[in-house]
Image (cartoon, rainbow, N blue to C red; front, side, top):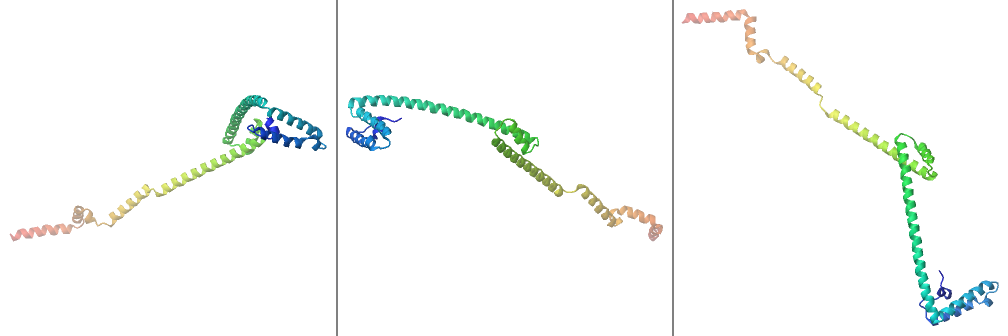
Length: 229
């Protein structure tokens, strides 16, 4: 909002002398005789300069003007603050609504992506919900890429789990194979061990049974020993 001080090109705290010099300079610049071809504009501006100087050069009128101006400035500032506050509230409400709509569109796209639909289907679904084309394309691209990354990560986790299970199975001892090896080793030991070492009593019995002469020789030896006494 232009003021009388702005018209003369001086600050509000300018002295009377500064106001006088500023008036002379502005009057010479905008005098109609000095503005050939733009006399109408110059004449109107020159008149405004004269009116401004008439008020500001009079101490009483300047005081009244300053009081009125300050009051107007306070009202203008308050009005501007109210406009700015209302504008900020409208912008905040618009951002909130836009963020809610964006979140809804993302959630919708994620649901269809989880069902296995591709990017083009997501884009079409969003357009069907009156989503702006550029935003629909952005959401479809982002959700599709995210879903692909998730599936790739899940596949890698499954492959890693399978590899770990296979490694554990390879490192674990084979119980059935160990039992069979033990049985085979035991049988080999039994076959390689002499009968008299494993069962001495049985050997003596079997010897007597298999060699009758050996038994008779023993009896004969006892009989001879008896004759000596």
